[in-house]
Length: 562
Image (cartoon, rainbow, N blue to C red; front, side, top):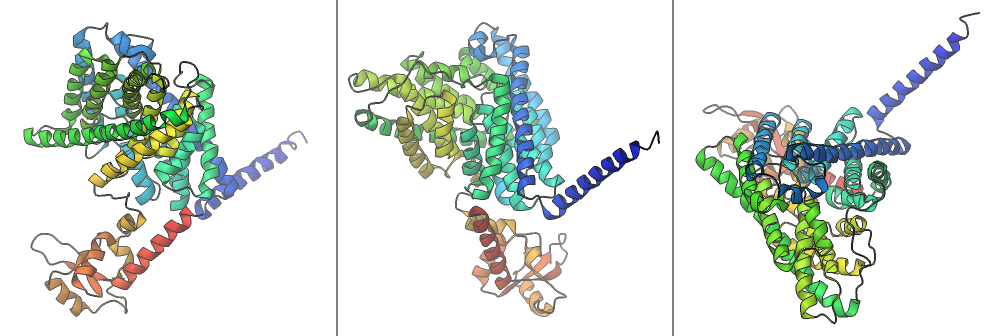
């Protein structure tokens, strides 16, 4: 009897293990039910929140070590006291390390960012590259710690997307579930970065998933709250920026000024985005012309940044110190203008040089400086009818960031949650609406979507423009053994006329061929080596391609309205 009491415990443990195994098998085979999905959302929200927190802490610790200060919140002020040669070489050394990391973890030396997360959600069933994503996060950590002039939010978003991809692979998630898991991770990462749970959830829906499906909202909200809790356990409920007292707006008298500020911010946002794209093109052209290895590109960009930082150390890192000074009105007009111009230049060098980091924090800084400069002019010209200069800085911060991100809703809420001031909502909303309306006409809707368009991925045009890229010809064709496939002799006649398509191509290539040739089918081949005849796989029929496209459109509409 002495050992008899142990048997029920063993049986209980075995039953629990069997139940767990059965539940896991069910999730992998049938997908999680609603309750299980919410648990997954909570877990990934906590994990993404910790990832964002550790990334931020890692930057602070490494900055403190490299620059020799414990007060990284005032790094720019401290950097003015350091020897000039250290300010010059530190970003270059960091860039060299970044180049080595990217050369090892990516095939093209390009840092993965929010644009890749958006592409993964749309075209790769909610998945992103894991190895390249980990390398990009590490590269961005080095960049932001050693003097690079970019933001930490973009790398955190992609790092969270890597975690979501791993989870989706483990549970064999469907495309819809994987996209929702991706949205959960992104929402938690943004919320943990900004202490902004509402904006984090809306950012995931507005920017990454690009729809507001009801089925996705609950798990994304759960993950967003979880990420915020992680932030507040470390930093408390404080806002990122503290404004000088209550800001007031005389709506009817000042409204035209904020409309004009929105227009100015829209132009500034376009200038920031185009500067990055021009710098990237110029850097790529120079790299090809001089035959430089891609590993040296970030190092040369770092050297340029170091030279710029000798005279203007405010460009170093994320730039929240300068943003706070703009929001509190501590800068004069010429400082605001000069700092804004130089920050645009520094961000273009950093991202164009493939050093890593995001554009959100730089957009906030440039926007705050633009708004302050506008406010200083407005309050001096119309002192009787204008409010405080810092109100314009706050509105400018939201207007430029919203235009760059293409996210007016979530950016407006982020500005509110960053500052804790809900009394200036009208000013911010007016400026944001005008700036996004202007910038969306001059670029492909946003910085991220324009990045993708430059790679040939045109998501801004809607699913009808890019869904064809998600369907491979081989998945739709009729094999040559199929009795309903086209006759082989007729296929070879078309092949001899140059009408055929590779089986690894997508419907994006096939549909224009149907339009141009007018044939009801196209032979599908394997392109052999040079001088060798292609191997016939089967035939792609126009009606089958149209049916596949219609199914994709229906699935996209069903997900968006679920």
